[in-house]
Image 1 (spheres, rainbow, N blue to C red):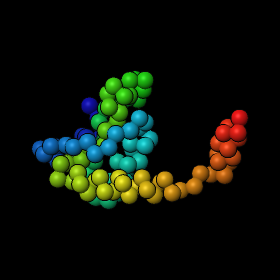
Image 2: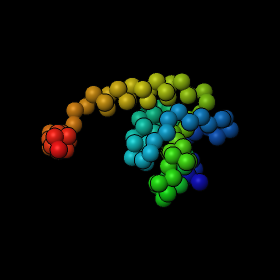
Image 3: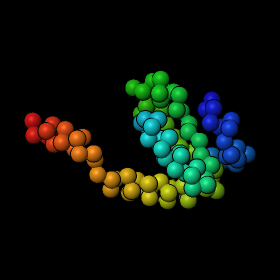
Image 4: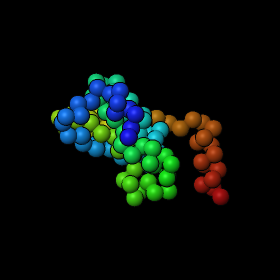
Amino acid sequence: MNDDLLTSDIDTSSDLVTVASFDDSVSASLVMNRLKHAGLPAVLSQENVVTWFWYLSNAFGGIGVQVNSKDAEAARCLIEQHERLTAAVPLPRRLDLKLKLKQKR
């Protein structure tokens, strides 16, 4: 059971909808926190299973970010916006140089 569900503002009487899934808990947590910051209660599902059994992440469907069904459309819009913003952020110079060196090999 996800401990976040015990302390969240999410309405567990309504259906929870998975609006995104990730292979790692860091990415999933970033999106969940973005949704919470925007006022949409969200929780992670399968986080512990995927963290412990990372090699089975695809079999479990990854770590799901879940919201109330009534908030699903707004959550998807925020996630798309988050992905566009993070994709536009340039890599740190040092990391960018490492990647270029690997590509030349």
